[in-house]
Image (cartoon, rainbow, N blue to C red):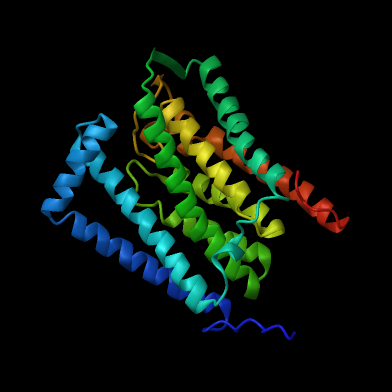
Length: 300
């Protein structure tokens, strides 16, 4: 029986598909934000519902939650449309196979524990950090976890699954990684309290999230890393997540130089975090590159 060859992409080269994708992605998200912020009755109704669910009556906070949910659904829908009808490939080919990538997922989950743990301990012993209170709500815990999963899955499908995947097909893999990381940082440039250190750290964070994908073409490392990073930083430790404050178990008190503490943007704007991220990227590069040269699967 003769197998049917897969259809070629609707558009070539692949970097052109990325440009069109990014423009459409920006356009629909900007349009959605403008519509949601235009005083629609449904926006107020959903924000009121989110206030009940989140336990936070601040309308600005609940509006941010709403935009995050809407952005997630738009992002997933856009990736599916482009992957199936422009790339003419399956959605699963973005990198959702998991059986041989469980070690990658575990490492992705553990790295935020190590990095954020070390940064927090340095700040604590340097007397830049203390915790004023501890409170636990199962509702806040589960809501925070759900939100972090949604953000991670949506952004990883966009920046690693689609953008990096396509760039690698027509560009040098390291240039592709740098471009995807730069786009990842730029997409967060309008977040509250963002500054130049935060932007640099977001770029290095984009390198970290994408370096495993360069070698494995699999998303589970970055999805677990992204989820664990946001969840540990925000709902657990109590720091802002990219400038957004969430309900948390621990309630930190920060003192001293914002270059160390990250200020209102969170630990992602700390020079300490930037150094830890850069060291981690270099270590993973050396491991993956060495294993690739030996012909071994590049899992850690």
